[in-house]
Amino acid sequence: MKTENHPLKISQSLIILVTLLGSLTAFSQTFTLNNDNSKLSVFGTSSLHDWEVVAEKQSGSITVEKASETASINALNFKVIAESLKSGKSGMDKNAYKALNTKKFESIDFKLTKVNSITPKGNGVYTVKSTGDLTIAGTTNAIQLNFTLTLTDSNAKLAGSHTLKMTQFKIDPPTAMFGTITTGDELKIEFNTVFQ
Image (tube, rainbow, N blue to C red; front, top):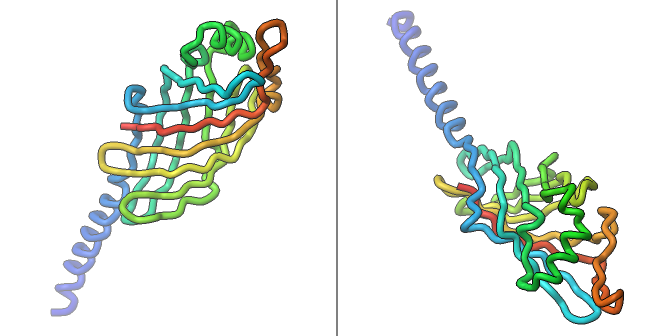
């Protein structure tokens, strides 16, 4: 009796194992950046006033794997078209594009290279500490990027900020009015990015 049931138990165990593995891998998914629902702003200072530019054209993707309350990011990249950064003032935009050398370097790019930690906060929310390559005006630097990741069945949302200096990317801070108006070297990038 025992020997007759043994093959049946093995086959049942295999079915359960395959089902479990299938349910774990079923949550691996790639989402594409939704430009209309995403926002990226760059904040800076000048000798005249503080300023903000907003990216109008972004693209990218994220691949995540979710199992129960744990998650991992297998890939993440995004791109901002440099001349889609708009301040609402054409003169300021032209100075920015000149500093970024947009005729030669059309985009600002980020590519994830390592997830240092991902901590679950409950309800599909995770705190992520990562390292990635940021390329601005043809210069690439490794940066530490920390953000909040919110996962649902239909999308992945990233929210965070990063502070950098233009000179780190070999960019001379723009000037105006024959050098009487100078721009501060430090910039703060804030992003709320939706991948669907």
